[in-house]
Image 1 (cartoon, rainbow, N blue to C red):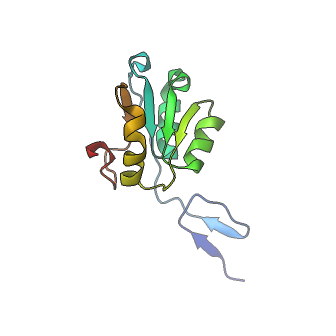
Image 2: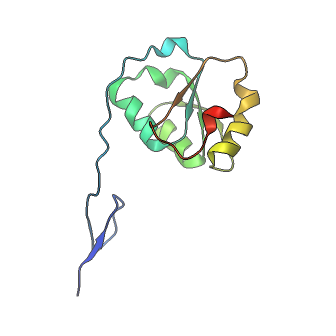
Length: 119
């Protein structure tokens, strides 16, 4: 039987995973006490912030989708709201009235697909 190779970190029986890239989380000096809410649009945002601080866990999080919300909970965070569509632009419209007047931190990668922060 020929080997099956997968360029992914998802594991499957009888499949050999090849690591394509590795995410390196950079430490940051964020004063989370300044914020009323966190916007989380990916699991990597959670893993990144969790790698250098536990202070984020006491701040309500707005998750883009249910899988992201599940990871927030698993890591000990508080889910205030979970988006319905899973798309950044729609998520922005959903949370805008909910975060109005709050000091919000959007934890994200340097390059992103949607323009959530512009909405």
